[in-house]
Each structure stands twice: as structure tokens, then as C-alpha cells.
Image (cartoon, rainbow, N blue to C red):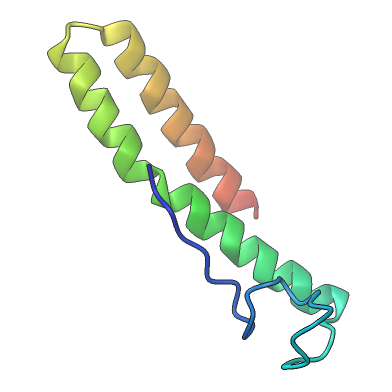
Length: 83
């Protein structure tokens, strides 16, 4: 699994902090730019896990799972291209 959170604001609250006073409220466009970039990065971060588990499935003789994982990888890439 992975653990990452960099929300590009001093307190990491996607521009909706009510207590830190370090930044102003983000505009809708700024939030969307930040979220889209975050979603793409998040999806890409899973690719190595998928590759690892596809290799494990192949080693276990589970070509059915290899195909499913590879299909999911393609769909995530297609989704990122749409974002």
C-alpha cells in the first residue's frame, strides 16, 4: 500500500482550512486544478502495486488475474488521460 498526502497548502487541507490562517480560500478553478493533479498522481502511484501483483498472480499460475489486473491498469491510464 502507499501513503502520501501533499495538498499544496501549508496545512494540507485542499484550500478549505478554517483555523490555520496561512492561506486564503482557493477558487473553484484552483481547487479543481489541485484535485485533478492529485487524482492523476494517486492513480499513477498504484501502477507499481498493480505490476507487482500481476507478477505474483503470474507466478501463481493465475493468468485470469493477470488479465484482470492488466485491464484495470489500462482503465486507470485511460481515466487519467480523460482527466
